[in-house]
Length: 400
Ligand SMILES: Cc1ncc(COP(=O)(O)O)c(C=O)c1O
Image (cartoon, rainbow, N blue to C red; front, side, top):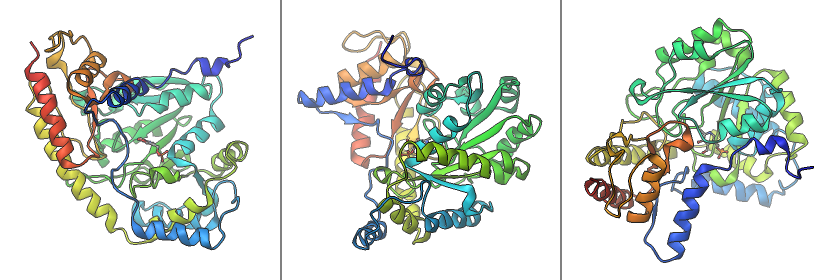
């Protein structure tokens, strides 16, 4: 009898770990490494939020809470959805978890049976397929090439849906591409879903507040109110308020689903961190200028990185609508040989050679289900990004 469960055996180890372990190994050996692989803002949590947490500690708000969040936070979340997304929810339709990741995990654990399919547009956030596998479901990957802006088309969605489809997971702006769906593009997808009443939509709006000039964020239940009862609208404070370590994510949706997710959570983590919940209330209800200020910085960095990467021979870098990632193609580098003699056969070889030869760590596209690309996180200081892009350019210049 195997100690390790069959369901875990279906899950592959995170492919991103290989590159970050290698980066750490090289840094420990004294190499000058620039890691552009992290998925978190490089800013501190705003002061008003930190103060709210300190006040919560001093007020003794340090005990277990209700399993899926304190009433005050649930109300702040309802207010947020009404104010920013035009969506009306009551607290019983809201759940709070240990990060956005646990929200998604709970939802899959609460709903998937063997054979249930989840449509996942690729490139995808690395955790989606493995969470589905862990929960016993079947990921159905739909490739969304660069030529269609890395976006799912209504035709591709229609073709992917079967009688076994339970969920579509939707992420805009996206990790890893930064691609955002316009209202019209999203309407094209929701029209398809309206024809398939067995399909639910899990929308991962984690990067809502990282939407740049010219792109207006929208979310499925707002675009198609007819899907309100079939939509789990997921969000969190991690990316919007530089609170990745506080571990607070939330979602709103049908009450039956929310209470099933509460059951999963009550038997796993009991409740999200009490102090972090009070900090999250301040994030949602307090002044929002942090969002505006950080957006300006990220947009400036995005523009610089896109311009510098497009200046690298063999690389094509589309301009993303949001998040803090770019996902350039290395099609023009394939089959070439690096200065140190490595033949670039795919994006994993590219990323490994780039790290070994220049010290720049990026995540290869195969990890996100669409090649040949790599992901750069530009949540880094401007001068660090500039130096990294110069190194990438030198690497590409030397390919022949
Ligand atoms: C698309 C997407 N969804 C969800 C998450 C999870 O966020 P959290 O840190 O709140 O668990 C991430 C984090 O990288 C993400 O990129």
